[in-house]
Length: 376
Image 1 (cartoon, helix red, strand yellow):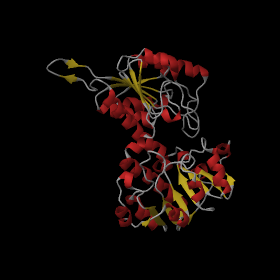
Image 2 (cartoon, one colour):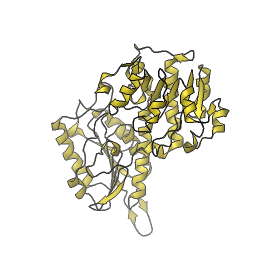
Image 3 (cartoon, rainbow, N blue to C red):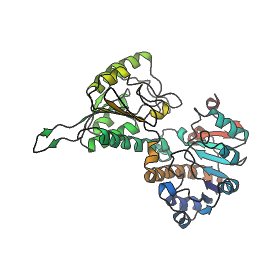
Image 4 (cartoon, one colour):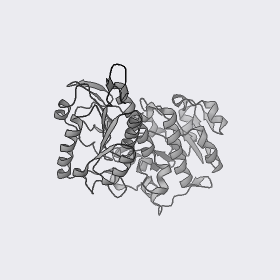
């Protein structure tokens, strides 16, 4: 099998699907690795580094797709150059972050071309799949970077500072959502010296929040239906949303910075911060809304923009992992190579649909849609 890695063509995407460190283990598994010339450039990986690990450099994107039995990508095809769906060879395989719930048209195309496709954003949250889970890896980067953005924007110190002029109290931060991104945002803000409160409707995260030195807030809004069977967030009941609204309003009013991280797969991000709440915040406070790409947790968020309104600065960053392409590519490549080794045997695909990892991630095979909800 020949596995190809093209240049990512999504605007602003700097990651690459594989890095040299993971290639020897894949070659040992019986495959050839083809890398489009310059694919690692934005992640500061040279073609020479790829060839040194055993990969083959292919000069043109057309030749890469033509010669590859399987294509590895970071970003989904549907929002990219439509030529990629033309280039992929019928009967080949595709692995990436395909986001089937928001890209049903892409999944139909893949089925029609008899592509065996796998979406890594569907990795089940079970112990043996952790090393294959790029959503967690990338969320960790987003949470870390969000705290740095807040620290760089806020007009005050984060830690307590004892100066000749006066003793300056630490900044007060609020993290909304204590998933992987939220926990990393907490950890980073705490390392920078801020006093942090974290809100979540899942009681199970209380211990994790407190272990990082933050105060958990949410006992009045805990919802035992806040997670689905796969470990992902689900939409809350209207009653839970009202309790959440009241708690969040109190928290953000006292905060110097707020980082919002709440996402529901395949749906718009839940609204956590209204314009009225923003108006009541401290002058000069900062909101970093890392759910901006899905509409944002703040009603005023503008994706991929920084705005100032009512004296508050609101960041709507998208694709934060791409802003740290070196480590983001390394982490994604580790996840991807672990998944590849799971589904390869003797250099060929081994599709065991009795295995939950393969079954949950495989979207299309032999012209059929295996995840019916992705077509709706």
